[in-house]
Image 1 (cartoon, rainbow, N blue to C red):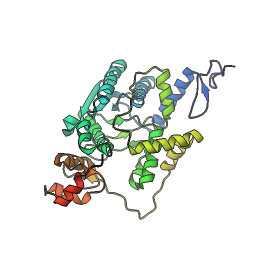
Image 2: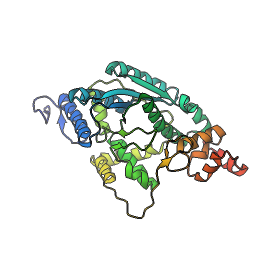
Image 3: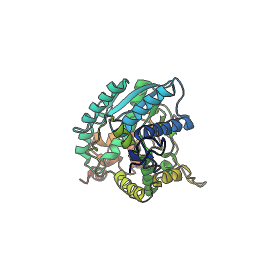
Image 4: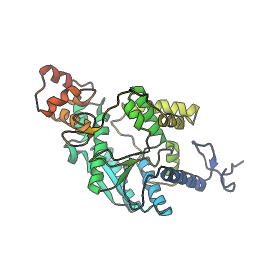
Length: 343
């Protein structure tokens, strides 16, 4: 016997929501998903009327759903926002070039302006070239650091007031787990924040409208809405540390679906005891970007690449910052240590 929608009790249910367990028809699921995102935006006061907002667009399911829902809610509830798509081209042949074609189609479908910034124009390196030098073990460190700064630089070019990203509930829960496993108190404190205030020149405030949306529901929304998105995983990410946290989280979710929200709420309610030393936020003495060290991570990674010392930015090598700033040469022993790469 067909199961009726738990919401309207009229139409046949086509799915069971992973987040709540409710059986819903397509129309009721669309409305529930969109309303939850709207409530997240309103409750956290993410936007103000008249603001210019850059939507980080990769062509994947999260950013495609984010762009679709942001345009829809902006019109439905008259947010009064000026929306723009902002993409980063990391220079990954066979992956990013294909996904950017999806972004360009999204631009036409949603009738939104699009800005693309590339690693090559910003840093003089593509991820393909970086992987050739550093191997497949730590390449995600380079990409993550460079992408964050590239988004800020792109946002400054566009003169937007805020950037919204497609981070979903699963992403936030994974980040909490990763920071717990690494013992990274500083990042653990701020990783669950739904928005970040301006942290200085060159940094644009960010927010996560999909923070409480389950990844499975985002996939279902994209599928039933027949949205055009790119679904291939990055060819360089199989060894990423996040993958292990994701596998662990999926195992937890299969046993207890509320695990995702439970982990997020644990991170939100975390308190650090008095007396614990926290990094002091400053600015990079070379590029002016936010940093708790004399040089930001991006500048250290670039220095390592340009000097042929790929391990310079991997791990804790703060003692080398003064040498880099003063352009001093490394000793033969130091160079040997920083050149060694495990493939």
